[in-house]
Image (cartoon, rainbow, N blue to C red; front, side, top):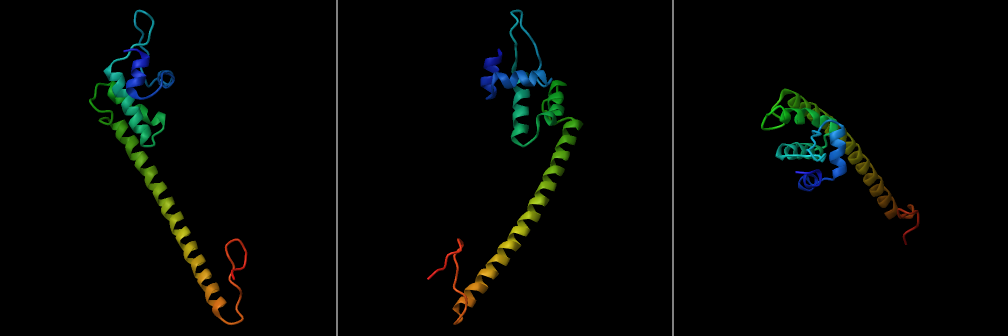
Length: 142
């Protein structure tokens, strides 16, 4: 198939395919007429790359999977280098999840503190001679 058909079947652009070719991820085969030619194996490579990128892998992280497919394995993650990339990505994701959990806990603590402060102000406002309640914009409620 030619580059336009491959791009359409893979759900990408010819520009992207040329970029992958320049990066060595997609083979650069030419027919007798000089046009780029591709086959079903190339479509499988592209689908592997796209799936991994959808998972958050950067383009260079897809290389071991592509090389595994090119080596004749039925799946791009059947090789030790691909498994190593999965492990490294899981470690990165675990670290990010840990950071997000820390931030979430901090935001939750701030919310609790702010709600206690608000409740304290509301209680003070109910006491005769207490402060007038204020809205978020600094105005006075009456």
